[in-house]
Length: 479
Image 1: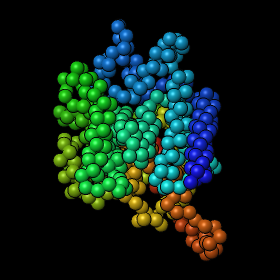
Image 2 (image 1 turned 30 degrees about the vertical axis):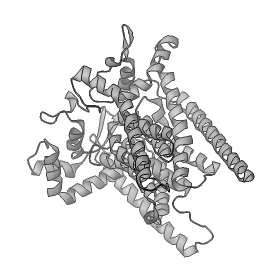
Image 3 (image 1 turned 90 degrees about the horizontal axis):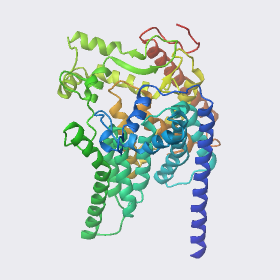
Image 4 (image 1 turned 135 degrees about the vertical axis):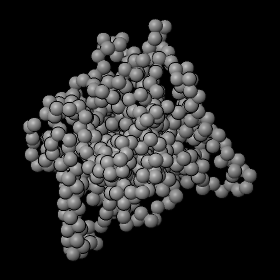
């Protein structure tokens, strides 16, 4: 027995050491990249988030009520307020170095620790160090320039990943509290993550305990209470802000803005649903090669549906769902285009300096990773356990809610990380090179070529709808 305990301790220690080295590896590689990056200023949303972090300053010092944004949650700006103070006191308000340092921390923790750790908990297996390195390098290659900017996407997914990890330790009340607080943090970073809360709740309540009868239900009730208390602890500052600044008793971010009105409604998601019928993809331009800030890929079929029905906009969710039901086949095709656009990462930055730059190698690598992930996952998708389905649900529900709206690739970050993980970690199945006959590999090769051809064709058709002129796959253009 003592030998078994000693071996278990050695494995645990080795796992922690590997996680530490993985964090350092990813952190320093990303730090080297952003330090030599062509991006040296913040733009638009990233600049606004830093301004919101500074808004907690007042004449008398810190003030929670300085946050006066009815569109966004308070947590992401508040979490980084200490960095604002540091920047003001020691760097003469120069924020770019601090922001890049923060981004590298998120890269190290997300790619080097949280995602591999969740995979190990979900699969019940152990990942080799090289698998973690491969996964981390893929993630860095695809998303490397995002860490130059102060955006909420990676903090939100990191909080959700940590919440899911904590839910696997649901016999410990402290971890249950952490799960509730962390999933709340993801919601108050990006409100759409509210959809993942029921899945985290079910994970926390799900148990393999041998307890029976009243004790079992009492244990679940205790977990539920702890989870709710943790969520409310994180949400209470938002309630105070809403009450004081917007005269609202809601505990969630209001998600309202005068700039996103549909009729008299200031609902952001309803506005996004309307825009999603006319715009299938959106990027942000910060370069001189494109004459507009908004890079719009027009959805001609969706726009035509609205024109044919003489509808300038859909003024409520009921109108939208009624319209979608009446045009179910067209809407299904529109959603399929949006899903592909969410996966089709054309740029490694949220702010693009050259819209017409060719990234064919990036696209080829991405499509290849997706193909491998699909091959590995399709064989055993029906064998997943309840725990695994709940984790998948928590990750994918956020992406599903982003399908009908104007697509930005970062909205599909959970799905991207899942596909990279499947491709690198081999779950739920591994292909055996020795057991596959040559004919089988020929079939895989042919299917792969058809898949690549289909992806490049779809991508080309989308890029042909670029508002100010089509973007070509294979050459750099100057407009």
